[in-house]
Image (cartoon, each protein chain N blue to C red):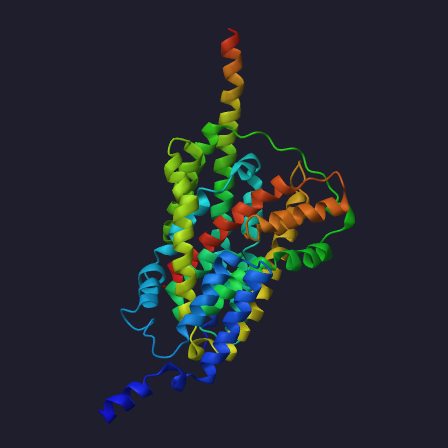
Length: 49
Length: 371
């Protein structure tokens, strides 16, 4: 006999966790990307000075 | 003397060959045919096919405790060693540039995991237990090593069926994706040209595996064996300072462990283990999982377009089904069919590699809750 409540908990936890992990990773990678782009832009300006 | 002779005679294999053994040989020959003649995932299906063939000879002792295939299976698969080593090699081959340049495509890799949970529920309805259903559902992630890793942990008796289903359907991606993606998109959507991606610098590429490890492993610790090795392999490659380690990870090591993995899985497929209705259900549920994974990716891409400025072509959502890089290639072909100026390959590689991470996370969550 399947414990449907347990099964529902497992699947809801699973899908929420997958979106949460990849969502946070998306934000973190996006922020680090902005930092690297800004740093890249600053470098040519510094070399001009 | 006569007794000894009779004993030796009774130990001859041919006298003990069963119908079940011969049916398994037919299955082994079918897999070898697909691998050799049709080029279907030959790197895996050939060792699996031969493993089935050899393990179904009577009295070989190959799968008895201490037997050669038992050692492959016990120390390589049951002890969870080989799938993480394969992830090390995959990491050393994977270019995360597309997903770093367009990080919102991580969500498409997550969306494709919907298929995992749909198949999980359907498996429960068909009478599988929760650990078995999780092992079947993960086929929808289209990631062979993750499927093997999770099944070896939760339902080792299903290992042969889930592994063969996962690798067979990965090879069938060009047949499974197009009808579903076409059904869920308009011709105008498929023809949409996406904004060109920015170049990703070396610094960003080197930092990425460390950042990704911190985020993923802190949130889902049980995904660590796969994610840590995946990111280590990627760090080897992107750092550019350990060329020997990069090369050995993505060539010699991955090839060696693939042989042991394939033979070890094939050897678990004895007639009594494999020839039952459950195997047929697993193959049917595998297709359902794949289909819902593709649909989930496409539909979430369409949903994302309601909120974001730089719209994505919904086709790239279909590449969230891991099967790297085949699903991205299928998306590229579909995009070109709709619009000759459409080049979606690199855009689709984002959700494609995100899908690998998504499946590993889904497996980690299953392990966390079930085991």
